Length: 494
Image (cartoon, rainbow, N blue to C red; front, side, top):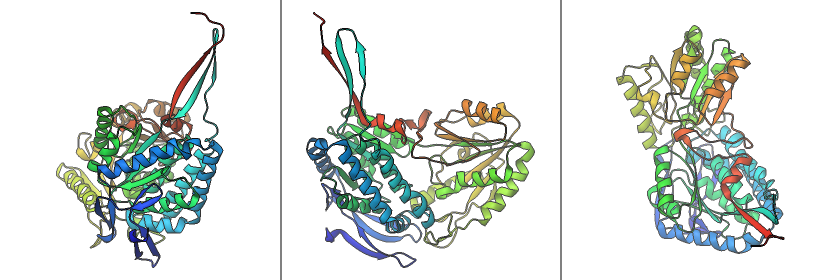
C-alpha cells in the first residue's frame, strides 16, 4: 500500500499523505496507466495517480461481483447499516484531512469543504443506512393464491462521479446502493480523484468486506465507457454533462440494457419579482450562481428581474458580489477559488469572449484574476438576448446573465425556453404567485425565496435533457432495487 503514498503540504501548512493507487478488493493496486492531478490554484502537479483501463475495470467488477455473491450478499441489513454508520463516523473524524485534500485537488474554499462537502457524504451514508432494514415488498390480495413482492438488490452497480463535488456525489451514489445490498465500482473524475481514495482507506478501516466498494479513476472514454458497457454491471449512475450522459445511455443500451440514472446539465432560471425582499434576493442570487465558483449543475445562471426593480437589483448585486473574497482556497474566508482545470478555464473564458462579441454588456468581471492558477472574476452580463450562447448554453463557471421582464407570462416564456429542466427559483412575497409559477416551471427542483438549498432527504434530478431518475431521499432507493413477484397457489386448479 505504501508504494502509492505521496506526501505533500498544503499552502496553509497541513501535511497530507495522499493515496494514489486504484482501490480494488480493499487493496490499493497499480493501474495500466497514470494521470497527473493538478492543483487548480497554482496549475502545478500534486501527484500522479494510477489510472484504469478496460482490464482494470473488469478486475474491479469481478471483485464487486464476488462480494455480492459472497459475504456482502449474506450479511443482514442491520449489519450492512452498522458498517455504513461506522464509515460516516470515520469521515466525521477525518473531516479536516478530507477537506484539505478536497480543496487542494478541486480548488473549492476550505470552509465550504469542511462545512458542506465532507459533512454531506457522512449525512448521506447515515440517512441511507437507516433505510437498510426498511426496504421490503408487500403482500397483494390475489384470488386463490398468496402473492407478495420482494425488493431485491440489482448486483454490481457502476457509478461515474463528477469533479465539482467529488465527496458529496460519492455519498449520493454509495448511500442508496449499499443500503439496498448492492456492491459498487465507482469511477472518479480524472481531475479530482484524491478525496475518494481517502474515503477508500476509511472503507477498509470501517470493516467492509473486500470488493463491496471499489474506487478507480481513469479517463471517461476509457474507464467510464468500459464500466458503462460491462456485461456484469447491471446499474450505472452518472452525474455530468448532457453530452456525456447520452454516451452513457448509448453504452448501456448497446451492452446489457443496464438500469441507468443520469443527473445532467442545467441552465436554471432565477425569477425575481418586484415584491420580494430585495436584499435577501440579492444574497440568494449570488449564492445561486457563484457558489462553488459557478461549477454547479443547478446554478442560477439566468437571472430574470422584474423591470421596476431591475436597476436597483443590479446595483446591489454588484456591491454584494464585489465584497466576497476571490483567492487562495485554503484561506478560511475565501468564497471563490479557481476553476477546476485549464480546460474549464479556457472554456469559460471562451463563453465570456463570445458574449462580448454577440453584443451583451459585461456589467462586471469578465477577466482572469491573478497570475497563476485558473481564477476568473465573477462575471455579470446584461442587455442580453435569449438566443445568445451565454443565455442558452451551460457555461459551468462564475458567469451569469441578468434580464428584465414585465409580468408572469413574459418571464415564463423566457424561463421555459431551454432544453434543460434541472432547477429554478422564484422570489416573491405573494404565496399564490409563488405556487402558480412554481407549478408551471418545468424543473426537477423549484426553490422559493432561496437557491441551491440541497437536502439529503428530498429528491433531486431533472426534467427534459437534465436527466433521468432521482437522487436523495426515499425516491433514490428505487434506482437500486428490482421488484420480484412471488405467487403461491393455494386452491386454484388449472
